[in-house]
Length: 208
Image 1 (cartoon, rainbow, N blue to C red):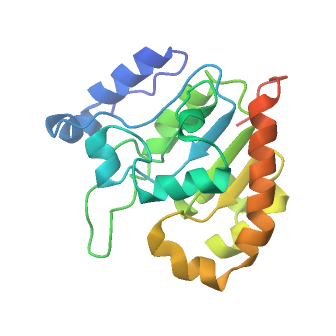
Image 2: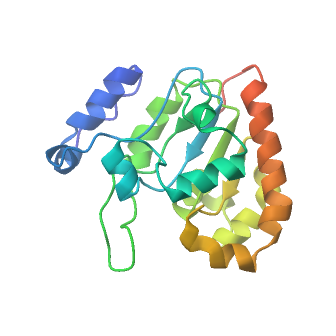
């Protein structure tokens, strides 16, 4: 396994991701690493892994889940895809393939190797949105609750720098129906925090 390229620039990190032997299978399939990062980014969106449609199009969140996420964030697609505003960092930069009951999970060691060097280059990020249990377990560690529902319900404990969300997949409609507080309590705070982060001036580097 190659070393994580700490201290390099964005282009060098992307080249290192592509050239990593652990990602050779993706390169053989013509997959490019699917993430967005820029030095002026204000909000980081940490998701699970690209879906098949997003991977094939080469555009992060280019599916029904992405459309719902834009609605939750109350931002335009142009804003969402502006690297001066949003960094889109899935827990794995490649579509992992199909499993028995859906897409396979992101690789366990991927985010721990590649997120930190990218985040080190984005000191202005004031809000990190953690979508799904994989992102929450990685970033919250022992601060996460017993399950996703409890973690999202306790979202105020992680403010002002982080906020956990359920996945915006259309397949998640039953969860949303069982948890109406997500729409009434979480989404207004999410939208306010996103709006604030996008207009605020970076003051100091967030400690990750």
